[in-house]
Image 1 (cartoon, one colour):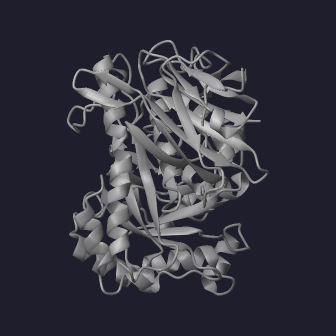
Image 2 (tube, rainbow, N blue to C red):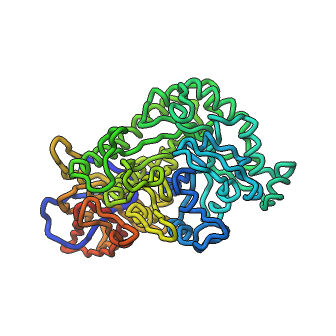
Image 3 (cartoon, rainbow, N blue to C red):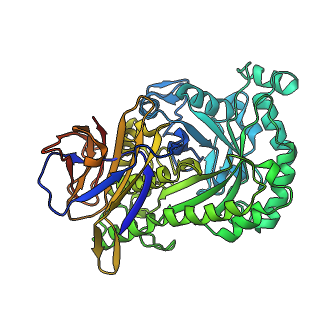
Length: 511
């Protein structure tokens, strides 16, 4: 099957080898390009399970090394990713979150119950100041999700005034709580999954409420990018109705999209994180590749609405793997182990986002620590980096790079009734002129050769991530089981070929 791509990254275990069932890649180095927004590598921090408490926040008095209550080990790992933006406080939890609970002296903050996620206690120790200070330390932009479900327009307006005002009682209150200078809200959404946990609203009903809230949701200084809470798994009719509201166009700069990968495709029995058969590997690859078609459907709907502002974007602010939990281990809410399958899913989706960089302005993988397809897992004082973390770290050079159009004929990976492209590729040019390529071999069993001669390079250098089994991952007892290894290749007879082992993700620089 022929695949057209615009992107940034590629790779593999490279060395010069003779041509045998090779996949030749063609690239147009002179073509018009689109910038891959750094925010495509965005993160998501919801108050859920042990993400904020234990995973990120331990408090200044904890025996776990920390700075102002934030774990030093987790902060260091996030800092190494150059996290571009963080979405907070939800998710579904955003529609239960009342910001006054999370400001002021921590010992006087009320303890609430997180009725969305397991009925656990919410101490509100990690509130506005703690979140914005974390983002500021990381150099990350902030994506704030306002409470539409149980909040009011006045509460939303007051929160933004508290965060950003330079004068007045709210600014004085913020200063009294330890922050004199205003915080910056870079991205703003009102409501979350309004068709479901955010209120079970029709598109028309939500659009009416959004227009009302957005009319009063103002910040001091530069206004944030306003993102309309959109559809799940596409649902083009929902998006179409939202964007067709008579008052919406002047109040938004983008619309969101949520797309999760469930190995079985069934919410009632999603599939296991480990110990799964190859049939579930194949179905996972098939289901995650749906992202390309879902984005295409959203692109068509957006194109219909000519009154939308210039630069209007699609914001995939929830995506990633969602599997069943092993209840025998009594895990925290939505805690799941990370494996090489997750890494392949991450690479496949990042390549899709690169190809659609003209429209996709930001994505936020679900989630950052201890929840779903996490970057990082913690257990008390211990921390482990997941295979997905390594993919995000390997792909860093593509933040802000110019996506290049490439084409190639991918071999098939077939198992039973499932047939999908085995190879996924994206390429880009960095600001300093380097050509970078990212490649994924989604085949669970076979290696595949890829010919990169068209790039005109004499050699390739980069890193490869793979594993011996489909469910291999990093654990607290073996935290470095799956990690990137160096790779290098030189052209032979003016031909540069790389060999991608099964279940692998690679990124190389072409020289």
